[in-house]
Length: 246
Image 1 (cartoon, helix red, strand yellow):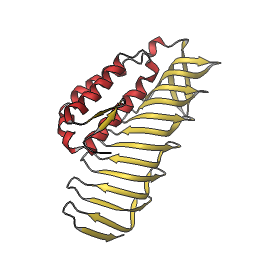
Image 2 (cartoon, one colour):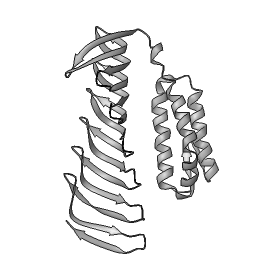
Image 3 (tube, rainbow, N blue to C red):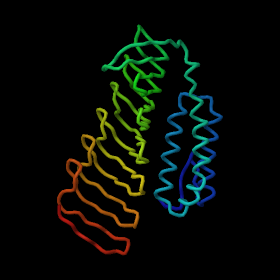
Image 4 (cartoon, rainbow, N blue to C red):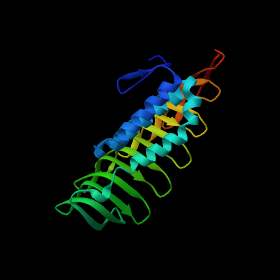
């Protein structure tokens, strides 16, 4: 894809203003949509597009970042469209699972959490989203009491599929999850601007990966159990090639 173009809603925007306008139009369409069940997914899609532009299109980065506060406010307003108080057949349940007391407000079938709902745990954690057979399954948002937040897919009560984890230190991971852990392909954005793109296994870097540093350097190599192994090649912004063996 040409870095000066971006496709949004089947339209191609070829300059800075039009790219930003495309994102804002997308948000406005979500705001006016009557399909509330799709709102979280559509918001996530827009965030992904924003991140793509910020990280891949240098010409629009400054413009997008200057407008980021505006976009954040719009996203927060759109998130309020998911009104769990108006869920059909809403009930309240209280119970204990995995040693923690919880209070659940949402849809219930045969005494089990099933459908849309919110679950509050005694330690301050909160989940908003889909349930199946009393387990988190489908799309949802999990708010941890330490300030971390996960948005994405769940299966059998665990993170599984595609999802984004926002950490309380400003870091962010976007990619594949399995059995509650990072596994597969993913991108980890550090709060200092460095990012890693590559393979994960059992919540750690494992396989092929590339580090992109703030100074323009790129480091490519293999990882095992979260550590560098073998030969790593660094391409500097000046075109120099450096090789390190681990």
